[in-house]
Length: 203
Image 1 (cartoon, rainbow, N blue to C red):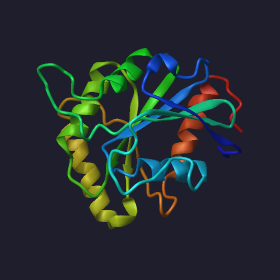
Image 2 (image 1 turned 120 degrees about the vertical axis):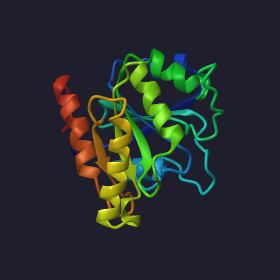
Image 3 (image 1 turned 90 degrees about the vertical axis):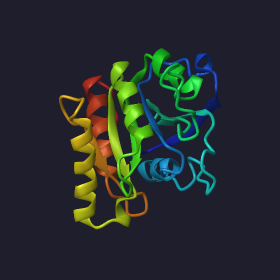
């Protein structure tokens, strides 16, 4: 897929005010400081489409971007600062859960995970929550340029071992690096395929 246009549409914290269109949406979410803004800018070949910050948790709103005039990339707030409360299930910001519950336009989510770290409970809990709610997702491992190939392989294997304890199959996943453009073609190609299945002209 060639990104010919990428434009900011709106930011808000009210799911009911999200764009009133039938265009397919692809939501990107992860813990604060996982490199989400850098990844979005890399995928769209725009240096400052999504605002990057050294301060984790800067994204506090649902941000919609219109890509190639025919699909939305959705930048969701990080869930790193949410208080984990298994009893009440209020693990994540209210409007994040509302977004996933209400947006029929959502095709799939991309859960960003920092490849440098061992599997983190909050990431695993969020994937479990998506699974329990029937929301399709892929994992995007970020910052792959920071590790040697063998270490990347080992860390992915750690995730596989844990996830396969409760999942029948390992979720679809991508290895990426925003600074090296690693994984760009694979992620965009995957979105392209999904769009083609909906008979969208994405080229």
